[in-house]
Image (tube, rainbow, N blue to C red; front, side):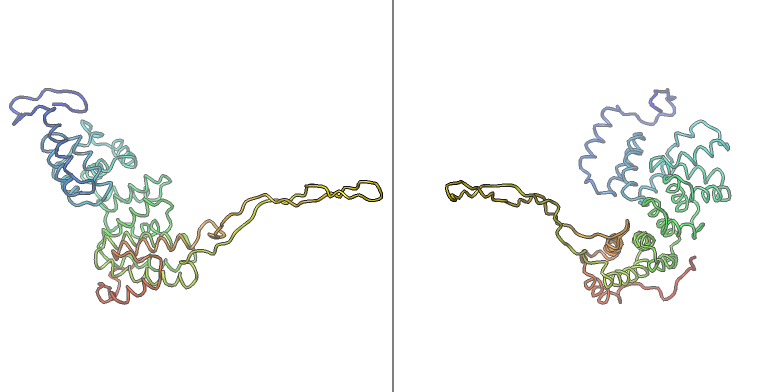
Length: 353
């Protein structure tokens, strides 16, 4: 058997079956060719089959591919739980404070499956009480990858904790991955009321906060299911309509700008005969050279309402499954027609900060 690239002897009594590796890999490659690129369900089944055949590394690669496409894919997480893949970083090592610190830091740069394995080992070894202060610190760390790993911890081992800080990450964090991870962690609570502070943030005076909140609400609403869509989608449509009334949805005005110069030169002479003398009058011609550019004003600062409108549309499309374009009237009409079908909460289930 090969472990970590090296061959080791296995007692005959421990061997239940054997296959030639070359033949097994050929069969695996043949099966892979029949799987569509975006068919995550079949890829999970394929990964599970490879794990059962002893192709551990290949199985982990396939599960990584699934988790990159869908970080919370239930089938992939089930296979990871059931197969109990070994964590190579901790193989043969006794759990200690040094290993604990090493694993927390390693999780920031680890591949998706390894992150899941690290969290499972940490939760099993030290428990929630030790993990909570560690990841509360990591959630505000300078490194983007460290904060992103912390949001995963709040989706898996620490569900329901640090809700105010996760809300701040959704609205204020400069990393798209961290904001998405924080939204997924909040969704793990299962309560639509957790979206209320982000809905309120859509009215912030900061365009960055409004845009970040719109993006996070799309992720949060989708993960919460029909109740989340009902809680979030109307607020997004109303904000989009208000933005359109302020001129932030339509395309900015266009104009032309000319950059060039004019110059004069003598092009010819008019020759006249006067009293036996030749007189030449110069013909002065004005020339023009330059370029005409078609320009459009995008804004006078680094953050425009166009970006906010795009974030709102992306989240509305994600939650509604519709592609209605940039027309605020079309989105308002759609909401009016379908609002009775949405599961709109009558009151928030939780109180956010």
